Length: 252
Image 1 (tube, rainbow, N blue to C red):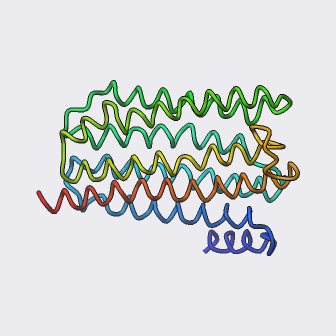
Image 2: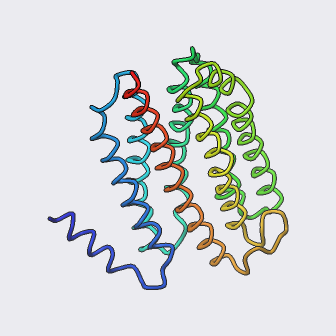
């Protein structure tokens, strides 16, 4: 009951025109609900898929907890919670990469694949954070760090679309291949929303394009893009894994 009253009090703080605060609130609730769904469904699956679904629940749970903090930070400070967001990403994005390894174990995926994806995801996030939060006084350095982050992102795209992960998925075939293809689209299209948010959040535009008129509007646009992208990508990732586990268990 206290939790319910706290949430209602939190909602009352959100102004009618505070779209950023609203997306923080909806994102936290959606990802917490997804976590409960994934955790409570674990007993439905064959044992070999439970770890994958458990990791899906952990991803959305970690994100939900951080979104509670980010929502309060936005409400109290009125600034983009960049530090909290990157702490969330440095925990959840590598776990999303781990999901590729977990579903491809049936085709003989090695631990090396997992660490390779984790490494490039960390490079992508660390360089993105430097460009967005540390090199804010140098547009040139923001461009450089953004470029490095983008290169790391495309390395991940290559691995899952054309490299070792793709070959293992084809070898596995069936439901695993189908799930892998959908996850690949999440990485290519869904994760592309983060570079877009990076560009929107850079005053004047990352590449000299005047996308947003002032830094305050840029920060608002960036946070809305990030919040929507987070909810869609993390919950969507989990639902793909859930569908794979359900279909594979039923077939077995």
